[in-house]
Length: 360
Image 1 (cartoon, rainbow, N blue to C red):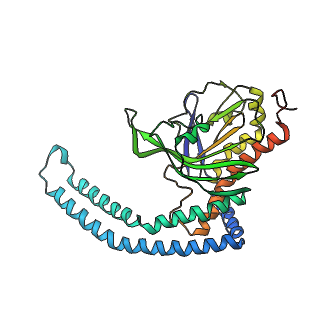
Image 2: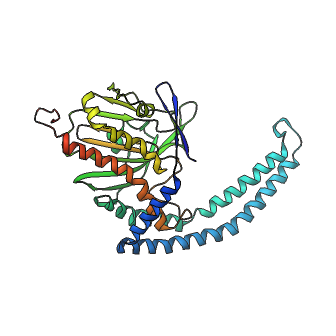
Image 3: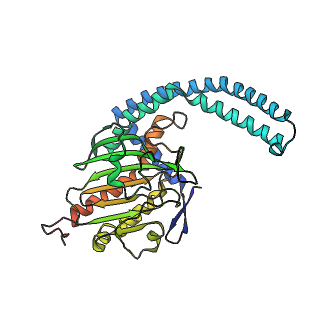
């Protein structure tokens, strides 16, 4: 059961529940069989799987070495805690000793997984598999790019709670061409803040995939659809556009829609589009995505369900390489479905006329 609390307007809560896990697993298995049928991709996945297994074996050896050392260090520290004289700060020495042992063992497990081979596997997966997966969605010339600074996020500034200097980090970047349009996919993380509002670079408050592209023809206005990117506690900064009501209570429980043209907002956010934006959560990997259209600029932000998720560089100990690739395909499908609906809508019914108004 995966539950995420979303807040909107007067902070009314809506629970999102992941259902039909068996159906999702069946889709992932079907995608795995499909990926296996691609000879080039299957060869890359086989090589990555051999690399992953070697990494897992190395981590297992390190665990056998590090955990006893961590346990011994924790026991020594616990003995020292128990030997301290009673004091107001040491009212529960046995509880403190147990906590010390747990921390020591957890630290040993963490150190055991911090290996160069694990880093090499994640990097190889990103470079060899992710571009091929994007190709299957119709993207071409997809390749890892150089991690950008925050200036590349400005097109999506209306969707993100904070892109101030030091407030965010771009971990991975993929560039390519999608349906004849340049596309950029960035794995984005927003740092948390303390009670005084200072950035805490040891804590992430929000994370997700940020997809920026451009429309073939400029839209005749702006539309911004925002949602609670970090569990509802923080919304993007004030948007200097009029709030639009779509008369869809289910959609507006989660989203705020702002636009300088209500007709444009209604034309973009069709019932099918609204259902798709709410339905992404069914995949289990994302919160409902957010959308920004500004003339020819298009940005889609898909927040991770958990800030600890890492899309482009999966952990070697999580699943086999084929399973990880299939799971990422299944997770990305609804996100690209939204982009497809958006561009299909523009190509079919939103062709800009010389006067800048949408065609009938």
